[in-house]
Figure (cartoon, rainbow, N blue to C red):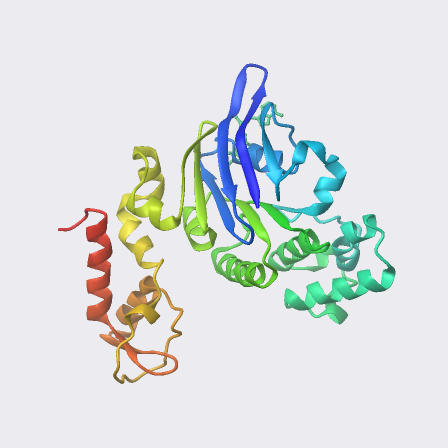
Length: 314
Ligand SMILES: Nc1ncnc2c1ncn2[C@@H]1O[C@H](COP(=O)(O)OP(=O)(O)OP(=O)(O)O)[C@@H](O)[C@H]1O
């Protein structure tokens, strides 16, 4: 659990983070979004004391971070940044081993951990362990960057625009991999992103920042249905809101008995993707994995229901 209490950062007379309080529960993902310069990175870096707070405090599992030596704190908290930040003259294996090495793990333990993480990130150790970072694609570099941040099994992982440099297709894949991994490991995650879509896809809770202030901290649904003010509403994008709401629910909730032709879709498919699939295939019913169907009619009704809850009925 991360508790951020009334955290403020001033440079001279300028307050770049202003009295922010929020909690991230064990195993949850918090996404920090907001305009450029709103203080997201500064807030993130105060969690691992790369930036020292001017006022307020951060508790990690109840322990005041200001009482933990910064270098020890940073070994407990993984940190991954945009453009991966890999050491260019060290192999993939050496990069991943950085923190375990600092913690004096045995060579045997380190080698086993490196291979375990490479497997986890779908990079064959025999093929990738001894490569240099420049011998990897952008997506592979990014995965190694995240693997390195996770190497010493940190309780908390901080990520600053980790997928910002990736193209949209790889980015979606990287997000899905991260979600799966995070569920498996139970890591508490705080991620800074410019991309509301990414925040909605990843965040259990989303923190919206503007000019150093926290405007709203809530679930994706809270933000979509009850934006705290015009700024949050504009960031959410009112035109896309119905689609974003659709992306929060899976077809499993709308499954009906019946049969339909064509390839089945997973029950975890969200309503937006199912709607796109109907339009793309030109059908009004889709078969589901494991039996049953979802109909275009059910998707429409559900979409209308969601729109009504936010007062957008026409
Ligand atoms: N060391 C520093 N000295 C003075 N001002 C700083 C320092 N670091 C950051 N700032 C200022 O603090 C404000 C917040 O910066 P921060 O990087 O936290 O914003 P951000 O929301 O992460 O922005 P972006 O999305 O563009 O990365 C900016 O106006 C920035 O210029």
